[in-house]
Amino acid sequence: MTEANRSATLTLDGKSYSLPVMSPVLGPDVLDIRKLYAEADVFTFDPGFTSTAACESAITFIDGDAGELLHRGYPIEQLANQSNFLEMCFLLLYGELPNAAQLEDFVSRVTRHTMVHEQMHNFFRGFRRDAHPMATMVGVVGAMSAFYHDSLDINDEWQREVAAIRMIAKLPTIAAMAYKYSVGQPFVYPKNSLSYPGNFLHMCFAVPAEDFVVNPILEKAMDRIMMLHADHEQNASTSTVRLAGSSGANPFACIAAGIACLWGPAHGGANQACLEMLREIGTVDRIPEYIAKAKDKTSGFRLMGFGHRVYKNFDPRAKVMKESADEVLGLLGIANNPLLQVAKELERIALSDDYFISKKLYPNVDFYSGIILEAMGFPTSMFTPIFALSRTVGWISQWKEMIAEKNQKIGRPRQLYIGEPKRDYVDVRHR
Image 1: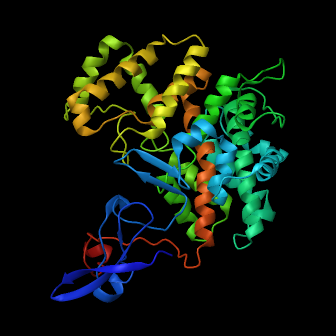
Image 2 (image 1 turned 180 degrees about the vertical axis):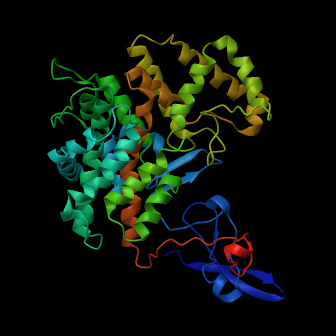
Image 3 (image 1 turned 90 degrees about the horizontal axis):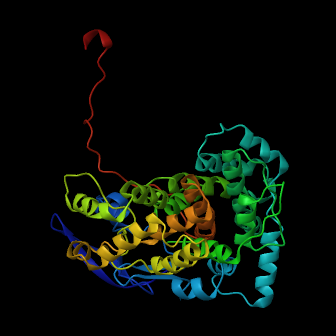
């Protein structure tokens, strides 16, 4: 618990109230208003919770003005270029980078939990063939609590650990099965000799009729995509997981709630929306028309993949993602892909146009991730499921941190009531 070392004074109706000021390791100071209602009989009003710290966390820190993202203190650029996804999972879960023996043990445990219960196949067959993979994932992940009864007790530290490993290991399998089901192909079982990202690509694109070899450049690109989406502080889906978890819900239900929240186009669906926008623009010569629309507040059009609610500078993840985009498209011989040309020209304009600079509308991580995933062969419907399986470790880390808090309370936001005042019921004959 962060200790307050000074206070601020709130004066209301002639009375003064002392609000402790808490100082974090990084970031702005925080006013502690927990006793404000009890002492002053008032709430604060903060739609979207944009000025409210709902928890303490030691996992991820974002400095939006500086364009900085730290996981346990390590810059995302260093992790993306020098580490790998499973090592990053260990870091997020346990707070420190593993030594060689710890990493080997962790990778082994994850690798040996990649299969799902065979009866879970029946869940997939209960969905329509044209069901969105995210709809399938929400249902199947929630249903995991019906199969893994030995990891549902949130008060048992070992059961929490088992649930964490299971979800990190099985989400790629579930996402791949959702994809295979949507395209009418047979499920492909995990192959434990492959890496975590390589195994996911294999389960998505291999078929029983012939051999499939994972390309190392695509494998690296997928690993980076997973790393860059692993955690992002108290965003909507993470807050949803924490809120669900605060009620004592089992971990599988909490992650299913996070997946449902992530599905929204303003959150996890942004990379799909970005690619659809690039398709709509189509060619470089049409860009001026859409730039004009973006600048016209009455047009209702907005450029997807530009700007970020948190980052007021260049999204640090976008820099790494751009490198992967160049590598993947170069490998596949589609560096002249029309969508990439549109994307690069839009990026050039955003970094030089006074309007975009003044509004700080820099390309974000979604701008390039959709292009990479399409180049790999994924349909747009799979973009958000890939985001979900990547973010699972962040959700679990945040959930475990919350459960371990001694003073953890159930989430219960207040409201500013604007409805009718108290009134008496009138019988239907007299209305």
